[in-house]
Image (cartoon, rainbow, N blue to C red; front, side):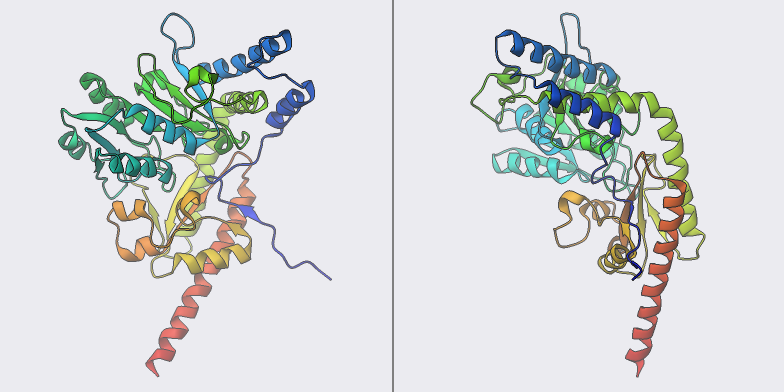
Length: 397
């Protein structure tokens, strides 16, 4: 009997990406080498420490950190982006009172720690964004006060792909001596990111967003900034993040960045072309779709598309059955009820917010993937619209 299950096309790669074969091989070599604990002082421990530190320094070099000289930046390895963002916000804020400023479109792993800081007594303010999802710099300046202790604005939005003016905001913060953290989880490994050139105090990333392993991320901390730990009970990583470090995961994130650096221009050009083709195919089908954030600079691989008049939950279920993996908002908030806080912050019309889905590409996405997925999406939208028309006709009788 023939298998009628459609081949799944993964257009949910902002949630996670497949491990790159070169990364898998590099990690396998590490596992086979059987490295000792890098905190051990014997010869095998020192050998493990050397491999670990080479990987850590390599991450810093690729991302534009200062790794040598007498004023080096720090690269603190974590279990991923969520832990990295928690460590950055809770570790940089210090003690209340004081003001903390975040954008209204942050990922839950930033908005969550911000809410915790609010519970601890900080005055947390959220910067408005315009209809494209870009931070309102005038409103930011209005919120910025003498008692501001920390600012956190993401580099690129996880739902819309919209890029934020982090460099300009960082300049204002530097002049006032206020640390600025940027969540660069969706940007690193997708667009060129240079830590020092951005001028930020702290930057966070996670490997599984750019074809590295799950379970490893990092906080990049500029020299001169103090970070308080949120975990205790060890001296590892200067006691900022205690716990035995995984050499294999460190090598994995480094190798994933090396592969990205080698292929960066090709990936950037190809994914931009595929994203644009995908959006053009949907627009050209007469569906009256809206691409949210398209009026601003965006990541090359992210499309947030609204199907006005359709329910995103229903559309998502139909696409899942049709073999197209996509998402409703952030994967980290996919279990939450209600419309996307990001799209609400953009003050978009209700039918736009309620009909929005996120589609995201990866390094291995092909033109055929995009074309077949677009066909399935178009058919799903037409079928749902026909169903709505029939329901509306029946209601008249």
